[in-house]
Image 1 (cartoon, rainbow, N blue to C red):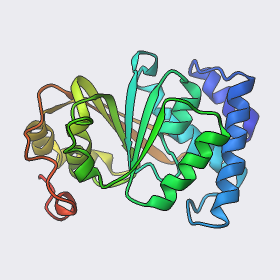
Image 2 (tube, rainbow, N blue to C red):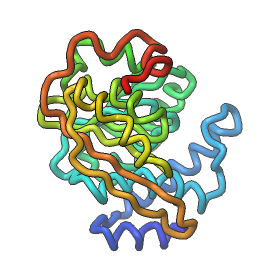
Image 3 (cartoon, rainbow, N blue to C red):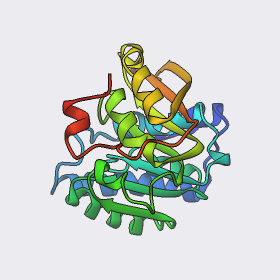
Length: 238
């Protein structure tokens, strides 16, 4: 996806980038590629691929959820900042918190935020299971989101404890999301969530399948969740 195509596709969906935002995406790409030569952040480094598979794919969450009405976002396992930082560029008012278990990624994110002049961004080197137990973060966020981190029942246990009542857990998935939805009913119910919507679409150009799953937080998550690090993956709630 060429840069002008990226902008055009976003405009079709009501997202218009100004000069500052266009410059931020360009610097994001350059910084990502530069740092990627020293540490493994992504296997996707060709410019057109980064704009499609990282930037556009990340922003696709906003095609199905109104981020103009969101204030606080927590992104679990964001790696090189996806999906929350492309969304932050498009919606500068967002207060974004990123949690990642690898400190080298956190180091990159601090450098990236400085390069892009991003404010109201926080980065935590932590396990999601431990982060979700902390009183200052538990039940605080309007939106908790994750992109391609784990299967949906596992993601639910990592994300729903962080969402405030009435807020939303957004899971960004690829092909096979329907199967994961089927095995997530128990987790949603147990963790205080309720399926609101599941939208399937294809990425432009390459036509690969994507899904945005929206889960509304309807009641508090029981205090025992998330369980200790590693347990959600080994023993998912199914």
